[in-house]
Image 1 (spheres, rainbow, N blue to C red):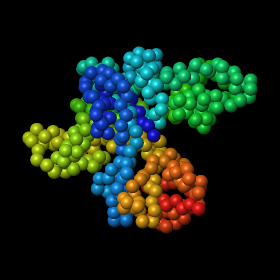
Image 2 (image 1 turned 90 degrees about the vertical axis):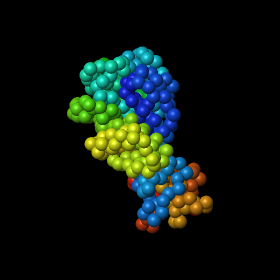
Image 3 (image 1 turned 45 degrees about the vertical axis):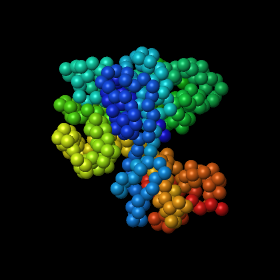
Image 4 (image 1 turned 180 degrees about the vertical axis):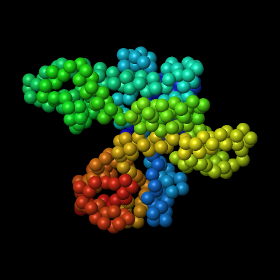
Length: 391
């Protein structure tokens, strides 16, 4: 799974990225600080299944804090997109191509209204323009790809009685678009798949926009919510757009994670408070007090909520544990693995995820908590712990 961060220059994407991953990333308040994409592991937070058995997990990947397990997925930060990116402005084509493999987008929007679309100081910038601009560039990106071969495969679909959905999926194969995605969009838009040459330009555009929204779903991270006009602008954007939107304070989250790493505080990402553990200077105390007050106003910094929402709410993924009867592996590690599985995955899909040989030899799966056996068609649920039995 790959999640892409998008946004205009100086919206705070690199700060969000570093806060979510603690990876090295250059942060500065000037446009195009990020040129080459940054990749690192971010984490969703789930309940640690081992706690139900009076234990704590020993993850092979990710980590555990108190009763929570943090499961990794790949996060990517590309350079800020500017108006005209779909036509190559600001190296836009290169950055859009970097996003092709993303399963979903987190759009980081600067709620302060203190910087304009180019990252320059502004008295009172309308932040809604940023949402509209990114929408427009992503839609033009999809439309440009569709238009490249539209007339040819639209005619071929009619003359050869072949499926339009297959032709469109092939055209967008590099963007993880499937034939089922195209079929769903055709059904949703009500456009005639048997007569694509009769579609007018507006209908073609309508189709490409719907395809973009389905195959690259997006959540808005309303960053810099701590600024004087942050809350006001957040409410405005929330009312104007139908994307999921979460108030965020990336700078505060980054400070908390670094302080936790240094042993100065104990902080569990996603919580609305932290506990001081080490000796702090007056400036550190003041900074942490300020962060604490902002967290109280918004029930946390919002970063973990965005990460969980994009994986579990937008993409509908579920976390599943391979769990034998003893919970631990041969080295004594408790529940060392946890996998993020696509929606609708079955016990058999999970067996193949573990290893192709396990999938081929699948007999049944057993719930580690209930001890109930389930067959290959059992649809996985969030937090399941399954022991796969083979022949």
